Length: 362
Image 1 (cartoon, one colour):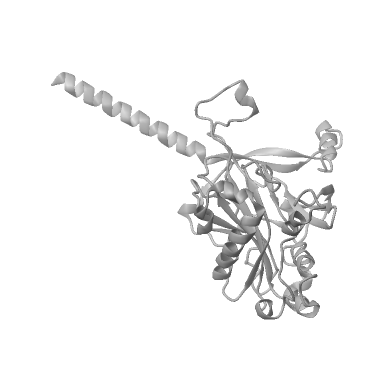
Image 2 (spheres, helix red, strand yellow):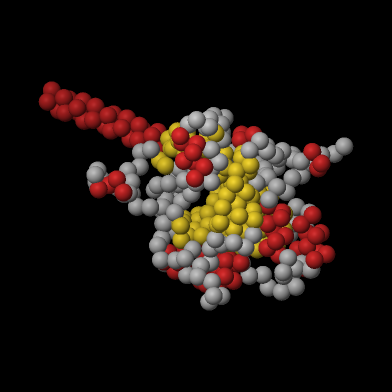
């Protein structure tokens, strides 16, 4: 009997220890490394190196952040800048199918547009871009973006939408539509269960204008503006653990300012996040191989404009809209569906208000 009691006590101790280890690992997976942009003094040699990469005397600054569980809190596209939804069409074919841009345009574009039009009743959604991450074999494949950013500046969303539509829309109606509310929303969908480098988001309510630095980007076909981000300890980081195919994150990357609803999110800054408890199968695995190495994250992003003016559904388009990168891929004279980035230029000392002063009621 004494021996049994000892065995039971030992077993209980081991269970308690295992529970503690499990809890510690779960807590650790909520910690992640993200890379902000840091302004450096001119004498710092990293500033010179950063300038070679278009960072204008800045450097990528690693920060450890705690990722809040988006599944355990209420998230909303207009309140926070992101929310969890579904894109079931991703699961209808093997993941390698989506390496074919034509199949993506034929099957996933309409499915994504339907999701957004259901989310915003009465609006018109048009997918204009997509990218696959983690799968090789396509001109439209890339790695996760490893630094904190937003796809647009505070001001560049509406001009981008007008540029996309100018050749296929009635000019007068386009001015009306672009002058009303317009938004750009990404659908980010996993192609396999996400176990590393999840996409993480900063809650809009913790974002300040001075956090963002405008980046002017010069492409072979156009100029645009994106944003990189300075560190801010007040940023509230959120991700959705263990995302599965069929699920999709709706991520707002631009929305029109509305002085009547200044609390409405304009965008959500975001980044892939390096989970600190996740061993990686990368270049360093040659020196420290791990049986627990996790393969790269596999996902697809579909980027769509959402047009809220009623005429967007009835009177706007004079011909079918075709996403520019799909048009480029169809042109045999062009080698890639990607636009070619020529140069970047950071704009210093230009914090832009989220609601322009000119738009506020006088």
